[in-house]
Length: 109
Image (cartoon, rainbow, N blue to C red; front, side, top):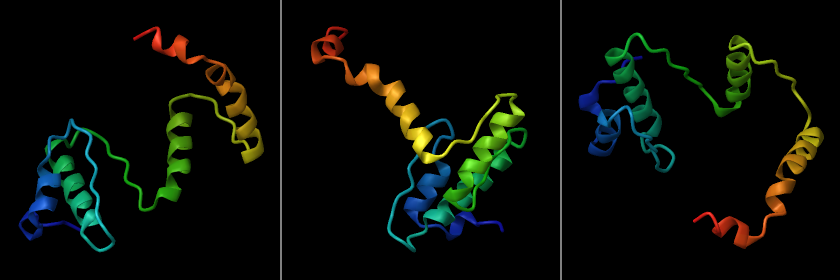
């Protein structure tokens, strides 16, 4: 489906035409045209940069599978773990951060 830029409102058009090198948040309530603006921005960037690849997800639940595929294609070995193991790994990795005193943190400023 192709989105015609002239059918967009000013806020949507601004998002579509924003510099591709900046981070961009498209926000608004349900039905406000966020997906339409995002789709039009993707179409614009694909047309301007046809040599670049794009990953497009229909739903956030697809992110895990895409991340796994990207890591696998890049040669990074992965192991899927359950929530209990993930919580234990996080606690182990974060322990040194929790042990920091504020004067240690602010001393680097």
